[in-house]
Image (cartoon, rainbow, N blue to C red; front, side, top):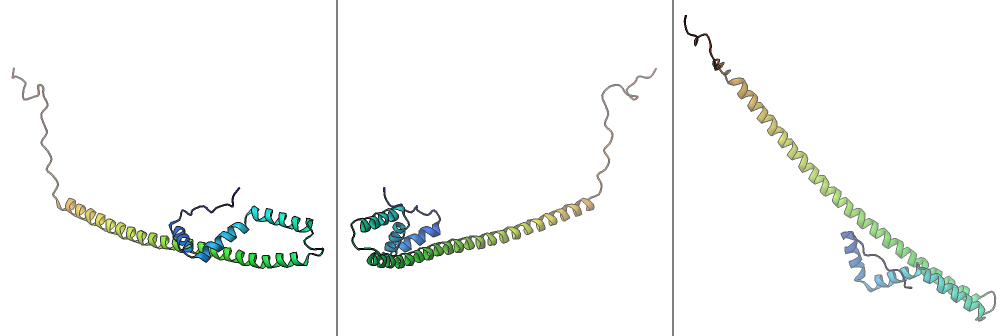
Length: 160
């Protein structure tokens, strides 16, 4: 069994943030410690350590040295918890900023689409006005002469 590794973020903004964090050694160390301290291996090691401390009688009850060591460890772990929370807050802020940028771009696109739609509407109205004016200005077409049908008619009948 190994300590759980973090999955690679799929958001481009988070990828960039992860790359920037990985450039500093102190960030890599803090990330490794928080990853380990948040794992079950951390719990198992401490359980074994406490059992061994008590079973091998490293010190007698009330375990003053063990209490001091655990208290110091708790102080450092609480600091790493805050570091982890700050890192999570940073990621959330990056995602929020990226989302805001996308919303702003979409708003610009929507405004451009509205502008184009209004242009199309104005052109459609102009075309409609022109075709209506042309239809009103043209004289009506003359009625077409009736066409003859085939077959005998009154003019084709022989006189008696």
